[in-house]
Length: 269
Ligand SMILES: Nc1ncnc2c1ncn2[C@@H]1O[C@H](COP(=O)(O)OP(=O)(O)OP(=O)(O)O)[C@@H](O)[C@H]1O
Ligand SMILES: [Mg+2]
Image (cartoon, rainbow, N blue to C red; front, side, top):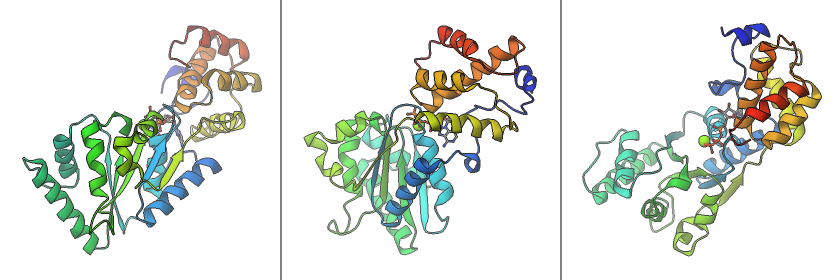
């Protein structure tokens, strides 16, 4: 147990990224997103999900994994989006448990046959492509082919493209219109509103075993303003604030402590 955490009677650092899937914070806005994603996948549709860095996109995918029935779907999570087309298909083979082939054509054949087999077993494959704003153009251009199967009557799989808002801008380019027009669901995660920031902080502290407030209302308002409601920034600054308050032997993070932390923070919040 780290000293600053024990100073507050915390069993573990409360704002760590190592949060279990079943412990994720799901306020109504995030629950709604998970429900929308679930509905889209039941409809065998493909989805675009965008949001600024650290707003909780990947965590929503984890909540989706928890929410989807195990039988009926095979989720493949892929976050190495910087690959060229051939390497991308090779990686897809690997995550699907297929032998990677040397040419793009044979890899595509192996992937589509495998996906067809899954279809016979009534398992719908879902490819979650995280960091998709980093996809190479030649990979992006090829993706719609995975969604065009049996004379475009069916999709081989559902694609969930997740990334920064510039992904949406890229998809709006004329050269990407085949893919863009096949993404029937377009979802966005917005940063938190002030009440949500307070609820998030309370939630994470409770998960770490603390029921009392550790931040004053003022400090939370300041934290929200400084981070614009971005969860990863909240995590970092709240942690530094707790550490600083512990160094100062204070039981509560007050406005002054937070101001001191913000002065030295260079993380972009
Ligand atoms: N629903 C949630 N419950 C608990 N913590 C969360 C939740 N969403 C986000 N967080 C916290 O915020 C951090 C950032 O979230 P996440 O990695 O999902 O953001 P992201 O939008 O995928 O960011 P990036 O664009 O940089 O990949 C997580 O490590 C976690 O600590
Ligand atoms: Mg992410």
